[in-house]
Amino acid sequence: MADDRQLLTLAQQVRQRAHAPYSGFLVGAALVDDKGNIHVGCNVENAAYPEGSCAEPNAIGAMIASGGTRIVRILVVGGIGDLIACTPCGGCRQHISEFADDKTRIVSLDNDGELVEHTIEQLLPGSFSL
Ligand code: THU
Image (cartoon, rainbow, N blue to C red; front, side, top):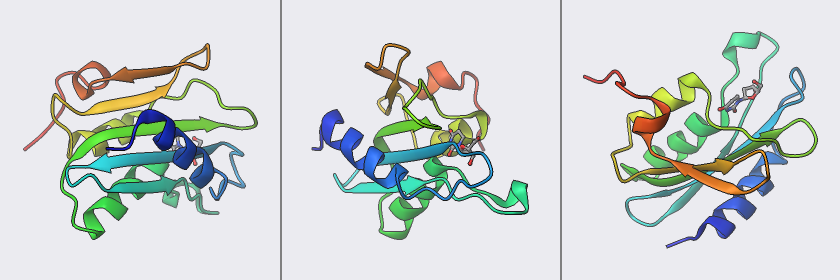
């Protein structure tokens, strides 16, 4: 399975392709699915601002389209210039929650630039589900 260094490289690479002319905040996400396959996504903004999409659901969409069903690990990086500590936003936590369980690890950088991981329960306690 891909390790976090590989996921970090892929997330940084896809982040460079983000379309974020309005915020200038580029985000990249790389995930490993239940089949061991890797999927990436970046944020894609739109002139009609609410129509933009975040990196995480775009990576999840790629996973679903290729036949993956669950997120094993997802790593997210973001920033305007240099990377900053960037955990998934609230909406993205709900997107991740749909395909996560208590073993899923959500990895990001902390304020010291170190990789840190969380569970979905830590990031979205008491989440809504059907
Ligand atoms: N963004 C993401 O792609 N993922 C997050 O978890 C946080 C926010 C994007 C949305 C928007 O394009 C830009 O970052 C600034 O909010």
